Amino acid sequence: MGPPRRSGWTDSEAAAAGFDQFEYATSWYGAFVLAATPSQIAARLEKAFIAASGNAGTAAKLEALGLEVVAKSGSEAQQRTRERALIAAPIVS
Image (cartoon, rainbow, N blue to C red; front, side, top):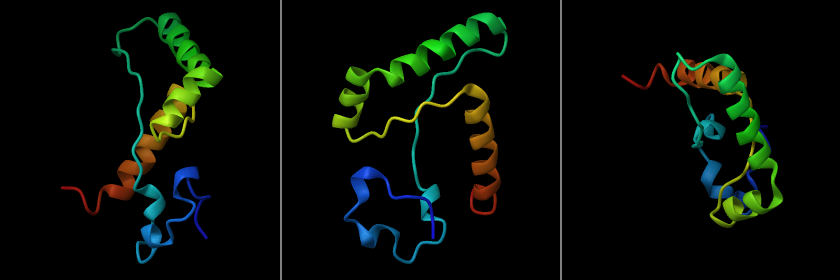
């Protein structure tokens, strides 16, 4: 059994049928800063983006576009990127 279905996919049994690891077929958006950005500025920006994602009005607008709002820290995004790269390595050249 995989991860829970995305809210917009509740009636889409065919979407996952026959696809191993279909839960990895997702897209996401992130905000990035240059590596040379001072850590206190990067932390402030991260805090602001996470706060904006938690704003009910912002979340409602994004959800109306079919997006699921999940705010993660920069370190969590780095970990997810590393994990997904390892999963995709055998099929991406």
